[in-house]
Image: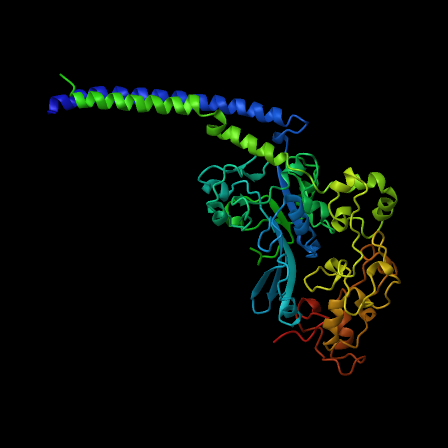
Length: 263
Length: 244
């Protein structure tokens, strides 16, 4: 090929690029129409009086009310078929012990049959001690969704972060990415699993199992779009803090009376 | 100009591959495989279709209204039925399936055993010394729990303060020396709170250098000591020694 032929070839090559681009654009247009019809499809699927666009869910937790009884953890495991083994939790309760020298002891009291460090708290070094229930924060800006390589985890319109277990390939990337440690790999399905705010209950107007059984009403579940919901009232009446606000993940689990040592 | 034959052949192969990819992507593959929206809608539907196990206390009240009426005005009014009795789906469908009633002595202490991390004021007992081996329901009705008799001593509820005070130099002071306790506080603790000292003069009654009441109490010049601060902003009255 000499220079002349090469240049002629170029003349052919660029229009070809243009055609390819046109095809790609057409495909993209098809994709958006597909999405529009998807919306209709999902609307009809839950047409039993539930419109996800009307809701935006969150949870409030009042630290001073939590008695660390683990009823929420037990109920969650039953409701959601979480393996009844230690270390698999959709929600769990931590005990914080803060000592005079600034040392902070954190202990997961949901792990059964573990020798508790509670006896250490009797000594006079302790400044304060309390329980902190934890769960998926259902971030408005979720790091786990950003990292999923197959798009298996996503935010729903009603503000819940879900995992599509049929799509998940079990790469554990999201488990690494979650700053709150709220995800685990389900030992049977080998897919990522996490709190769903009991989505199957919430769409039917029920409370999540943990909020349902909490004996002291330390967990308040509600709709952030409704000013009259218990959660909105809770956020108005309390001084609210979230976990790791500096990460900009915008968590939707709101803590009242949260100690600065809690991470 | 003549296009070399190998280029022509290559172009044909490329065209076939290209068309093949397009046909596969847009005609052969089902939309549910390539459309993110469809997949998410399907996942949401699967999630929403999962069975509910905890039916909620309102379902229980439909039949067990006698218990519900009692519980609604008791200290246990915030408790969900299924928190103690377990999930009731099967029981709701078939009433012959009985739900467990936790009568064992180890169940109630899950909430009511003393734990220093529990919030102050939450009723707690020491399971080893509190009527050992006696089932809780012998004395307390779980649907309307009240103490058998209102405990006379403050330490029944305020155990942590009592134990802290016991090793302090205020050990010999009775609670009522500093706090006035309304009678109602003993039956409805949060509806009437005990009083607390409000002024520096209260501590100065014993600790001012001119005070005559307690000879052995450490004395300070109440008008000069501590500047504008209230005594308990530096000294914890239940453990006034402070820490060094």
